[in-house]
Length: 104
Image 1 (cartoon, helix red, strand yellow):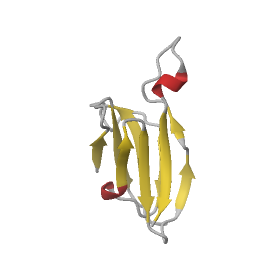
Image 2 (cartoon, rainbow, N blue to C red):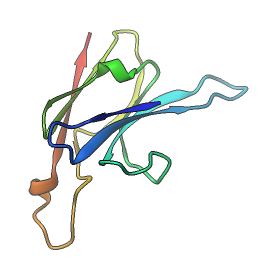
Image 3 (cartoon, rainbow, N blue to C red):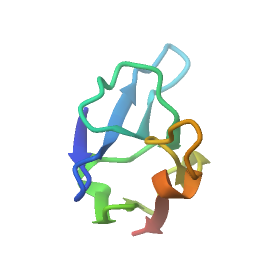
C-alpha cells in the first residue's frame, strides 16, 4: 500500500494490506526493510492490526519508527525491535530499529 523512507535513507517502513476471506476482513501489517527492497519479498512484520494507515507511520529519527493507531484498532502482534540491516559478524545494535506504538 505504500512506504515511508527513513531520514537516513537506509530503510523503509512498508504498509502491506492482507486480503479478506469469506470468514472475515483482512488486515494491515507494517515491516521495516532495506530501502528499495521489493515489498512482496519475505518480510518480518513489526505490527499487524485492523486499522493502520500510512499516515500513521512517522520516523522520529533515523532509527525510531512511531506507529500511531486509533483507540478502536485491534493489534494482533507487535515487536518493538527489528534489524533490517543486520550483517554477519556485525554488532546487532548497529542495525537496530526501534518501533514505538502510540494510541490516538
